[in-house]
Length: 221
Image (tube, rainbow, N blue to C red; front, side, top):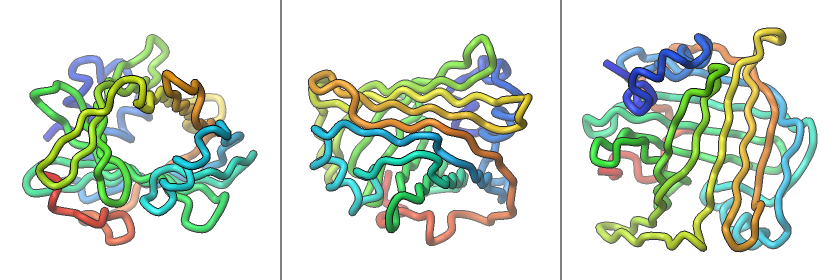
């Protein structure tokens, strides 16, 4: 079985650094998860975005705090949801109580990309477009975005979108992953971002644990 990320990148997956390939090749049949620990050198945000960032704290969707050298943890957990290969991507930032940024990903054949469903209740959906850079890094950009409430889908107009740009690379000299994330909006510009590093270890994990599961697990499709 190919992972969600292998399906999204196709043959270009082989162009990623071997450590990045290993990290994103896990599937639900492996019964393993990848756990990373490190520090974010900086976490920044635009003051104009504070109301939205505060609102996101109740749904594990970003947060308003900033900081430097912030302890960071990321858990990447593949799981099967109603027969669909899925990945939970749980980020924890030690800047305040319960500051998490949760995402749940599946490969969408019709869109030919990963669909990233964000937050505890998974109402915000966004396309993820992946590329492997010439240096072996993984680059991610967002595409179309929409809200889902029950059976209703509401497209988000481009002026209101949160455009995300992510680069994850492997530093061979320091033997660790480096990540940079920037979120922007066409109207206000920069919204939120962070950059830092982490190392990983692989743990036995038969399925999605309760602390990583969304409130509506099993209801995505």
